[in-house]
Length: 147
Image 1 (tube, one colour):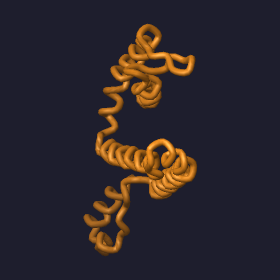
Image 2 (cartoon, one colour; image 1 turned 180 degrees about the vertical axis):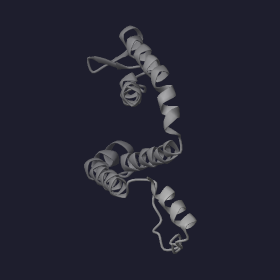
Image 3 (cartoon, one colour; image 1 turned 180 degrees about the horizontal axis):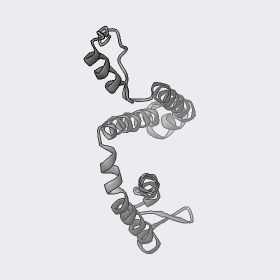
């Protein structure tokens, strides 16, 4: 029996239970330790980008913070996408799994025929700015939800 059934049964018998709705702690809808660990990793990564690229940015762009600022922008964009993705229902991801997998396989095959060669490897489309392997990673996670 679930707690709701027990509570209803106790109320019908005549036992009055105290109202604990005001003293019950608020439950968060996400894993707090995982979120804190993720934020710590992003901050650590930003510090590493800053320490590794400030001289290179100054020599090539005359701005020591150029690469750090770009990385902060992409980290913030990723955070916005992460928060937006949490509002999608689980069923939406399962319905999109197979179409996303099909698109990623098609994009991976396209790389074989019209991919751009950079440094001796053919990895991307659109002058190397789009790598279908990133979509394939998302597709594999999506398909694992269905299977």
